[in-house]
Length: 287
Image 1 (tube, rainbow, N blue to C red):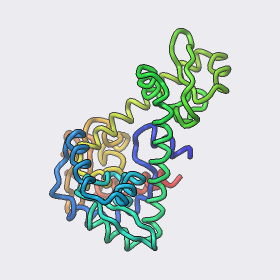
Image 2 (image 1 turned 90 degrees about the vertical axis):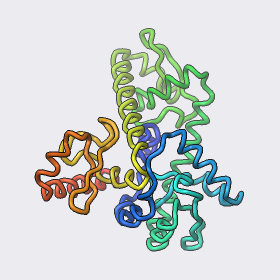
Image 3 (image 1 turned 90 degrees about the horizontal axis):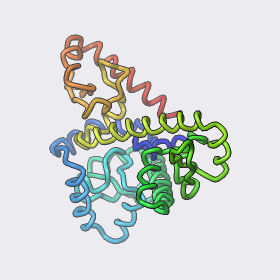
Image 4 (image 1 turned 30 degrees about the horizontal axis):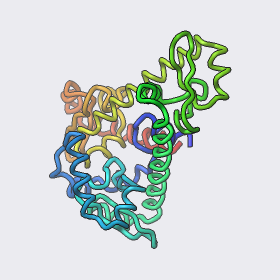
């Protein structure tokens, strides 16, 4: 639950088995490669149009799932009308025919990924409902804070409507009334934690926005790499949209165009670095 709430509040994509993403990279490029990135507004409009083509029952499945379990960075409807797949007797939705094949090839992984998505979507809806109880200004402040400064692993809204307190003339939101006494007992610590949370949420939102500018088929590959292949301490998306580079026949992502020359100067080392980064991200995701 801790990891789930963190991923929701920070808008980083959910904790899902990245093996599905890596196994599907080749098919994904074939199935999705012709689709260029669109603005968020264009994507939302396209999704709505594609979902209108579904039956009410299939639309209900999409609402509970929202993302493809094989390409978990792709929203259902983003690549055309979602396609139903029956996996071990359970109906799920995938983004395209290429993913339908991959989903059926790995039933256990597919159902595990689908369950994780559904849990995330349900929790996200609960948090949204809790935040909606705040007025517009407080809702904006709570969203910018993301987490309780006392129970820092608890997303605001995960325990009902956030509680607002004033600490040294600054509004602070808490996950519950039980945190009020601790927040007021050490105001300097509370405000320091508040500032750190806001900075972390802001950076995470910037990264999430940067990833939306990638092609849908590239998002999962970039997510599995996590960091720049040259500036390995730089999360992809922290300096704008990740830059895609083909090293041999392998897609590699960089934090900026300035890293392109170094990446190409030693292709073998670049690919080895990418493999190390993928293992690191997979290990972190599994925790």
